[in-house]
Length: 310
Image (cartoon, rainbow, N blue to C red; front, side, top):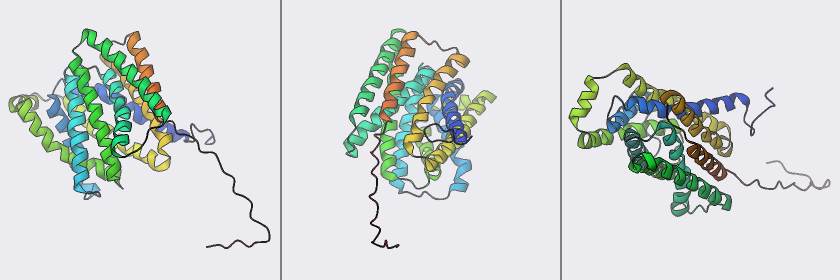
C-alpha cells in the first residue's frame, strides 16, 4: 500500500534512496579497484572526463555564473576527489574512507556559520561533537597500524567538500545535472596537470599501456553509475521531497561502504572502529534533525463577512 511511508517518502522512492546510498557506498570499493591500475590523480581526471564528455552534448551551456562552476570544480572535483583518491592510494581503507568523508557535514555546518551566517542549532552542535569524537577514535585506532597521513588526506577531502557545499549554496544552480556535468568538465584539466606534475607522464602512460578491463570498468562505474545515475536519482528525490526527508538516507553510504569493503576487499573491521562508526552516524544524523514548528490553526472566518477571492 502506498499509504505505508517512511518519513513521508513513498516506498518506491525509499527503494531509490537506498539504491543510491548503496551505489555510493560500493563506489569506494570500486575506487580501490581502479587505484590498482591508475595513479590516483590521473584516475580522478579520467573519471571526470568520462562523466563530462558524453553528457556535455545534452545539458547545454552552464546555467550559473562561470565563477561558481570553477569554484565548485576546484573545491569538489580537484581538491575533494584528488585528496580522497590520494589518501586511499596511500592506504586508507574503502570502508573507513566512506565513513570519515561524512565529516563533510561537520565542515559544511561550520563554513555555513562563518560564511553564510547560518547559526547552528544546539542539537547540531551536539551531533557534531559526537561525530568528531567518533572520528577521533577512528584516527587513533587507524594510526596504530597505518600511516596517519592517509587518514588526514581523506579528512582534508571532507573539508574541501564542505567548502564546495557552501559554494553550491551561493550558486543555487537551477539545474543540478547541468551543474555537476560542467563541474566535472572543468575539473579535468587541473587534475591532468597535477597528475603530470606529481605523478609524472611516465606513470600515466604506463597505466594507459597496461589498461585492463578492471580499470575501464572502474572508470565507467564511477563516472556513469555513481556520478550521473546516482546524482540524477538523488536530484529526483530532492525535487520530490524536502531535503530533511532525503538527506538522512545518505547516512547509509558509510554502512554500505564499510560492509562492501569488508565483504569484497577483506578489510579489517575492529570492534573499536564499529563503535566509532556508530558515533559518527548518530552524530551526523543529529545534524539533519529539523525542529518541527507548531501548527497554528487559522481562526474561523466570521460568517457575516464575505471573503474576497483574488
